[in-house]
Length: 406
Image 1: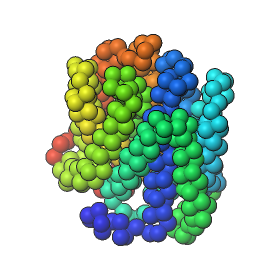
Image 2: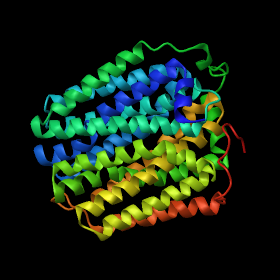
Image 3: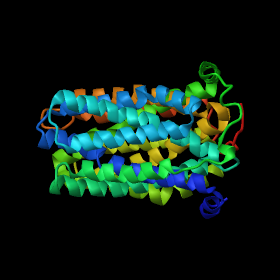
Image 4: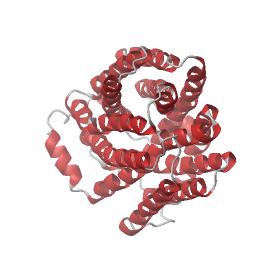
């Protein structure tokens, strides 16, 4: 099935969920890449304080994902998504008031993370539930492509607003999220989205069921490693770029990132799916991450840095949908919200560790020691090695079919 055929076959509620995801990405990336720069350059906090705010955000985002998964499992994903968007809007409006008190900034950074914890696992579970029988790798690749179109637009808005009006990007994000919330409030689900066994399925039973499956334990380990690497895109990359080349380079990071994803994610994953397994794809993705961090560690010039961002993005666009696909297609439908929330907890471990360690390698003027990049090289190699040793990568075996069980 090609992309156009799949889009035409999508039910209207699923297309609306993708539209909401796009709007949410615009709002989110109008803020997050520039929030660190805003704290350091305009509010004159230290890079270590900025790292602490991102850590609080990550603790909220991934730590509360278990609560978000519980709400999505017991009350339905729509409520969890609505709560998440409502919290995001409140946080953006509070930041737009120009607060500069460290305690208030910390509290709302944490709440902003909680809002993502409610929204993201529920949106993935809902999209998978609304599209039974669809190629899940293609579906999650499409979701990521749409998300990154939002990243490109959002980062452009954030970059322009940061130089024009230092709190304008918060207002822009709030307005976009209000539109997304309106669409979400008016979304009506078909009967197919209501899983018959949902209310009968115990939340704790679902957790236990998933945690005894070897494939899921491997996914948790890989997602933790991937999250350690990915968080550099949101923290160390923007500060590194702003320090050496100015605010414009921060926007270039996300334009390159989004451009590569939009152009290559769906066709590349479709091509890989004809020849190799999901595990082999993840292995290749980690190798791209190795190459990216090697280039950053060995060069201080802007062009190789952007080339490294492109390689980093190739790793991202392969690893992320492959992990989502395995989780979505090999977990029971009534445990999808739980599966994605558990992945969120693994992401908490990886992201917070990556952020704290990056902060420890930072200098007072916003630069980073070279050892940070080589540490990421090592961890990307660990990820590739873990896949190769544990999953027994077979490079010429076709990717697993949708809903294939162990």
